[in-house]
Length: 299
Image 1 (cartoon, rainbow, N blue to C red):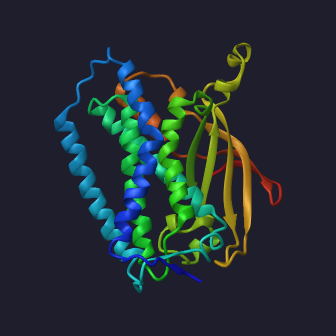
Image 2 (spheres, one colour):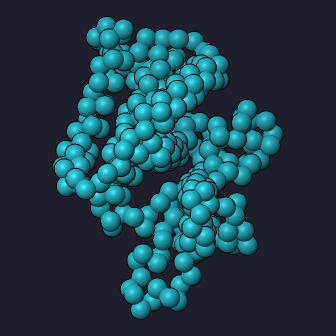
């Protein structure tokens, strides 16, 4: 059963946006601007031209994204704003929450890079990138709340928040730096049979990976032994979903490639290496659950 909020629906999206952004901002703002005072020697100048380019591009892509979402996900029946408390944690065995976390994490990193390109200091760039990522995902969740098919999900919003905040957490807590997140796709049998219109809607075709930079964790005496460009990864996917809680989890352990460890310090090449690191490319792996399967290359 869905729970309909008893305040006027025309105000509920605004209230939720304000609440969500306030929580996110207070989570990171105090520490970031305290650090800003420490870095008085930082002479980076912000380019208003580059910020305008970022703003214009963002407005264009957000508008385009809204049109796509409106035609793909929100074209069904409308409803009063409601929460999805029933099917939300069943239909994909929560694999969708990993997706929400990952795309919040990815969007924050993308905008952090863009803001730094415009001259914004790294820590503030991470904050602004996180706010933009979380704002867009919050809007999406609220729009879901007016869809009869979906409904607003606190689980999704929580994953969005954690994904958007994680890059800032990595900056302030070095213990998190060895742990990054990646994604990969490989067509499932259901997708091949036409079950979904695109691969990103099929959680059985989607794999989420926690990539661990082993060299950051090894003692100095062992760092020269383990190759810099090889990481260890833990993967997750799902299979046999029926949309009502049926199906099974799949867990993997394997190797991963750290492209940022490749030689070359050209600025463009460094950017390419960094962006390649957001995707898990085929590598040896073993499925450890629900049964053991060895892969020479797991896509």
